[in-house]
Image (cartoon, rainbow, N blue to C red; front, top):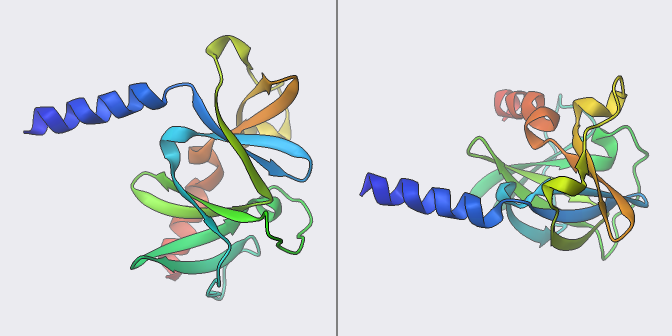
Length: 161
């Protein structure tokens, strides 16, 4: 039985390999590996928690599971903007913890081949959050490193929840 579960998990990873969810922040296209994505939901009422960084908007209850919500714009040092009908929450799973990411809009799911992925420029401040840079239909895509971007936030939210 345990072997079957491991085999199913490996099959899932293979199926999602090179697959990315593209989304916009400002006019810039970003992505996360599809293996992290659980679902995409509309923006809903967020319960604010005190003593958290400004970009941690609070928590939501999604089908009985409490999920911290982070505004990616603020996390990346951009200005906050009012949410509209395109704004949504991308729920991801990092190390078995779910996090909601507020993004301006979701674009599509694509396959990005390894050949079209480049390393980030050396010394770039964004390199601590950006795993790589790729191109899709002639547009530059910043591929977010979920582990690096949210590792400190997971600890902060858990400690304050």
